[in-house]
Length: 97
Image 1 (cartoon, rainbow, N blue to C red):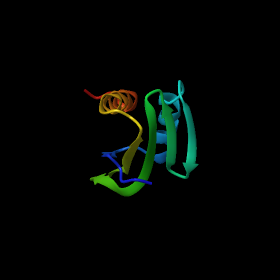
Image 2 (image 1 turned 90 degrees about the vertical axis):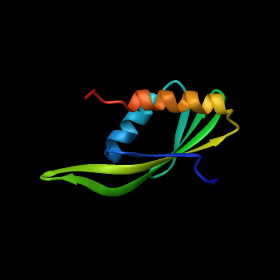
Image 3 (image 1 turned 30 degrees about the vertical axis):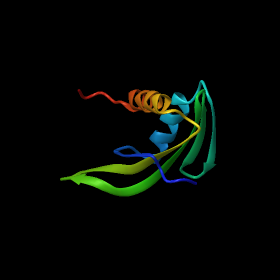
Image 4 (image 1 turned 120 degrees about the vertical axis):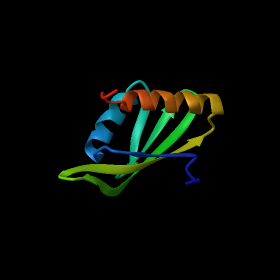
């Protein structure tokens, strides 16, 4: 595996991430490589997404799960990478303004 080319921290449970990722990737071929790692065959290349648990975010009595999400792109031009990440972000956007 190569070094990830993009990383982000997300406040989301692993189960919710996997559910949303399946909906996001529905038009393309996706397979789970290992627990917390998926490969998506995007029309312009391939992306491997890895989810790694982080300590939860705590604010008073509130506790939220957090994960580091890394993206490794293969044979994908920079414009396609930007498009993939924009669609990913839109798919994972939740309300709140």
